[in-house]
Length: 123
Image 1: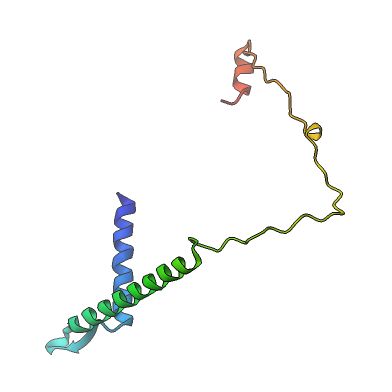
Image 2: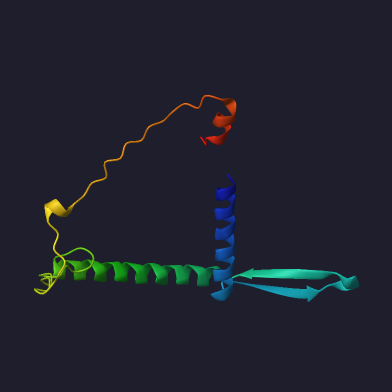
């Protein structure tokens, strides 16, 4: 539950910072009578709509370009090289199946006999 609230709070902070940077809203402080301060928040809804439409258009163009480039290459993602380089002929490292050694240890478990010995064994 805390993670969801933190995610929502982070989204609100991100949106507020982005809106402030892109001038989606403005906050003005105006002194009122008798030492009282008032805040005026102006929300520029037309600018928000215009910026979001521009972002959607740019995103769709980028997606379209990626799909066109993918179709031209015939591959998905990074291109795969046609051939891999051959190993050096003077390489001194050669592994044969007989060189592989597998461990052959067995693990035994003995039950401790006294309570003092049981306390020494970690679960």
